[in-house]
Image 1 (cartoon, rainbow, N blue to C red):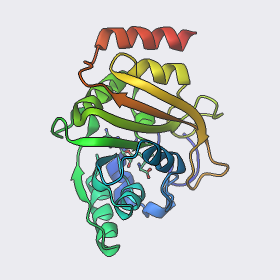
Image 2 (cartoon, rainbow, N blue to C red; image 1 turned 60 degrees about the vertical axis):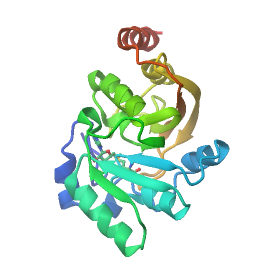
Image 3 (cartoon, protein in one colour; image 1 turned 180 degrees about the vertical axis):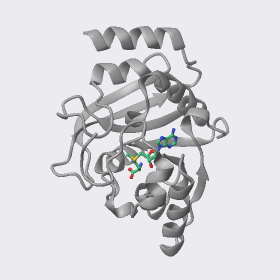
Image 4 (cartoon, rainbow, N blue to C red; image 1 turned 120 degrees about the vertical axis):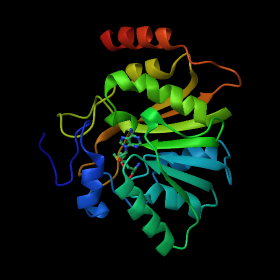
Length: 226
Ligand SMILES: C[S@@+](CC[C@H](N)C(=O)[O-])C[C@H]1O[C@@H](n2cnc3c(N)ncnc32)[C@H](O)[C@@H]1O
């Protein structure tokens, strides 16, 4: 896979990357809070609530959320990412709870947070692991909690970087487990120019909706073919 310095494939070694890179050089790095995430949090009036920044990486999203008064938990699979993120938050004087956690084998407790922000994790997971992700985020969210997810869209040309995901495919993974509130076309701002084409999805966990694994997989296969 070729691309800008710091480019990662979906199956790349995250720990190796964060141990050896300046985080500001990574393709997804931006100091700003993602505009789609900010809009969604305002729209659903989640001010001051408990929020998980899943796959926090450089923790720029987590730090911006903490600055806006959210009670932030931030996780990443890479211990080096978390170590660097803790140092950044400390030097910014921000109080954020950081944990090393793999979303595919998560140790996070059930009903932990009111909202989850995923900017760039779902699209790096192998296809066969995505249902595991869906079950985990469903478990970690409180009833009626929100998942805000940004991923590369299938409209982004080329093969560099993460998986491209079509809207119908994305909806298929979550339908039956979550209420799919919206999926909109957008871009993924960071160090890559022009910014790659992306999707921003808003999912809501129901009061008592249960994950329905087999249906979900069948729906995904159907929508991928259409
Ligand atoms: C594209 S980066 C995005 C980082 C951050 N969300 C941001 O917007 O700057 C994807 C992140 O997901 C993390 N990641 C990859 N696989 C993961 C997993 N299975 N569990 C938790 N984090 C994971 C990586 O270490 C990396 O920090």
